[in-house]
Picture (tube, rainbow, N blue to C red):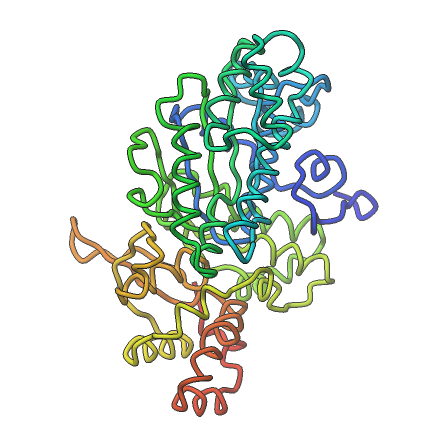
Length: 431
């Protein structure tokens, strides 16, 4: 790539069409192939914030959705188009329901319900021309009108819309639900957890459980909210977290991808610095870089900073640490000093139970990106995970967002922080 051909890195946009048309794109399109090959009915991908979940969901929408525009041109120079013709034949033939709950961060259940209702309504309006175009019967059209004018039964939304779109298009729809767990976390923080869990459970059950009018569904979130609290009875769900090997390369950047990025931007000599600051995660034991921070680093003239710090609210971290026991606090300090801790990781998160189990706290910190977890075999059959701070950036985030919160109520930790000389800028967080 010549210097005059360089594209800007995509900061502030997650729209796939915009990214591939105007920005530098690291090709993740083989995610499409692996999803089709897996042949699951419902996928759940859990990854930390800013690891490419939304941009991948946008990519899937542009690939599968049938529209008047020929969106195949977006993929002709990408890896998916070099695969067997059977994959290309899947492009642009399905109705797609694409919802994101990333902005459903309300202070009450009433506000949350209204926001969820608006998101649902907008999907019906998106397909208004088809739904009210004379291809449904009178009852079905009236039901759609009720949803559009705000008087329908929202818990029936997914099942009803998938049924109607199947009838109209002759193809089963694909459901993409991004950041599904944001309102659940907010409900826990603001005291309406049971109300939001009940709603989401009923809503997803209607759309996902035994739905014969669904091609497949993909959900993303930061956490896998435990099956018994929200996915009860959903036997067709396959979950892929950061400790699982399938799909591990599609969220975040691999070392080879970052190396190619530095070559394209003529900053190969910065690769070691990028690695110290933004590498060190293990997704299914594959080395992964934080994509948001790597791109910010390139855009800002290769200036290392803790770009991930403050990219979203971390109120749940503060609440989690309010009642942390002293031995757990000592482990947190040990980690900040560059040490490690061995623990069993449970990818099932039930918010009320996080505070009752020390290992649940560390599982939460792994799933949210504050710790890396590398599988440690005790013998051929049994293993646990070695936990460490992954890199310099997270060392700073850890100090500011975790240890600092502990120091407010804990004089011992306050004294420790006063003596801290930004150890996070030393190479103590080697992958």
